[in-house]
Length: 275
Length: 330
Image (cartoon, rainbow over the protein chains, first blue to last red):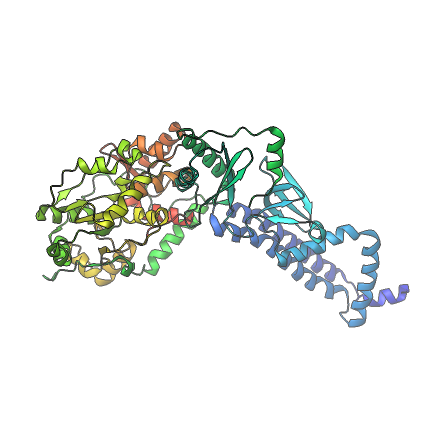
């Protein structure tokens, strides 16, 4: 494409056009900035599904503002004919293909993530062994905060090839699993009943969700798991601590003894997914 | 006011709350928005100024007792060894009505188990100490028969089947509506013969001595979710322009929610039992929360028990609803 042809693609650019485009860009930036500041602040003050709804508005608003700004600005500079569009797409494709492949791949994955929703703000996800709460879904990266308060930036690009584990998938129900390991010689029915009551009496428990106690016999003893849901996914660690502390307290009063698992077996146990 | 008695007993599943007026919903929504922005309604008070309002419990219960008598007359005459359940929304006065009625009938009022009996699931020991002598009996507050702790739920699970089998003869069990909602989760069997008083409507409010237009009384009935006792309390508050309904402190957090839910579920708790229900909260933290709630007029210390204030009930219900707690159906 010669210089003359490239020039033909564009309209006459006047100062007024430039000011208008600049104003649109500034307003778009301001709207996105405001949504990214105000909505998380608002989300911290509401609870349950309302919080997740408010958080989910952030990426949606950003995309809508971006699309609206592009639809406004592009016709200011370019005559929107089929020929022009194809020419620009071809040029842009070449540039992107060679120079900004990874960056644009992440941007596109970000757009896909906005409608496929593999993660939303407020979700608890695990990507490549890193678990945390999604705090912000940006254009290129998703920002998660781990339980140890470390912020991890994960490029959306992982969406194409990686496995994404989402613990609550946009909802407010997140199952927690708490394990107890007992020596084999005991009344299993009684232990199950006690552990069920341990869960039912936790103030963190979401009573509208089921509580399940499952057990599995192992060579070293019996592995019990309480499966239950906290009121709020953010309470999962306090909930699990509460169940563990009170479960231990109750089990200590019963004629049962805790299993002593050799360290090498304990490591295997940690790697094995629950039923 | 007419001589007609507007107290009626209905099966609990037929209860439906009177429609909340739009203005009340708007006010509730406005208060929620103000709380989000850390502001308080100008009408809200931040201290226990409501202490001293006329007692909502002192109303003429005779017509309600008569309704209870009319409903259970046939069942009493048959003398079947079975129990009926009567649901008692907070501050509705149902337990007091049931006590009046069973006292007239000469029934025995059963004493709740103590903490050691509750934990040891000593149902037989508890029954022996009642000495019912073959007469029908009344449990006036089933919430006293459980404690939401790992060792406090089994007593009621053992007691309920025995009550339903008729092991203890004929009786009436008054159960708080919040306790009932929790029990349906902890002991998932649909209990038979569960009744409650029909929701208060303007005619019943007039019978109670509340004077106002139909519109005012419909609005009041909707606001208090059809509870007669609540209607009296809120109406007294509205009559007195210096008195306003308390609101929750802006610092209210998940710990506050735990305490308020525990108090509603157990219909008030002593400090010791509250600590047993919430062992994850340090005693100091529990005390700070309780004292703050007391300063705001949300809870009261009465007869060695922490209880929810009647004037704060609606705000507390709304607060717990916003956090997805299991609410009662009333």
